[in-house]
Image (tube, rainbow, N blue to C red; front, top):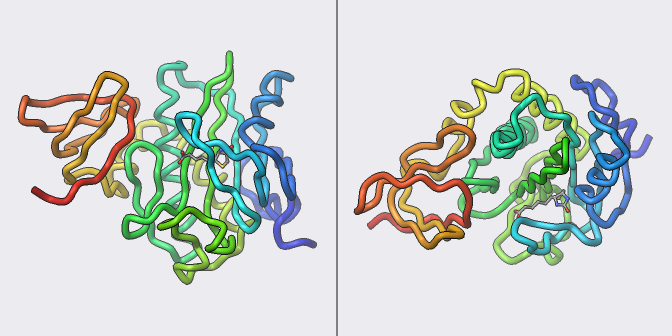
Length: 243
Ligand code: BTN
């Protein structure tokens, strides 16, 4: 058995997903969207490399060989507007999966997984007509020269680079979060590295700066600013040095 294929991920998997594995693919999110159009759900598209990985806001996501790239196609019980909650759930599931690899990571709002400020994983949630695709890219064991500057990986952090184990734990933890939606925000707050920090968020309506004080349903960041409380639902968030 290869150390990273569908059988290795499914071995002992405690979650009800069909695993579709690709050694290399353009984008697991694109493949999951294709499956959504064909009416499928409950599928985890997993790959060891992506040649056209996508990040948030149309950015490219470097996805060299040695990584773990997963897109879960779900038929959500949540209202479509609550999809951001699934991004937070995926973050919680990712840090739990990494705990099992011996790497303690934190969550930066809205979709980053960091260790000491270095990005270890990212999440891209996309809605289709009646499905949600939640894509997670985890830097596991790629050649550091192939990763963006400043990125971290499980291997460089000295963790266990067993990709099948990481994906299996991610899928099980994601399922646990989905079965307990009320537990998602408390779990996210507990692992957040954004709350309590001064942040600058570039939103579609302008820049908001202040202290991140809470995250509210379905994933709204609450900031305490010089002009009072502000709530932001989307944007790029930068952690600032304490004033
Ligand atoms: C970001 O940080 O901007 C989000 C990155 C999300 C990358 C993952 S890798 C698996 C899935 N397939 C993609 O093309 N993108 C997501």
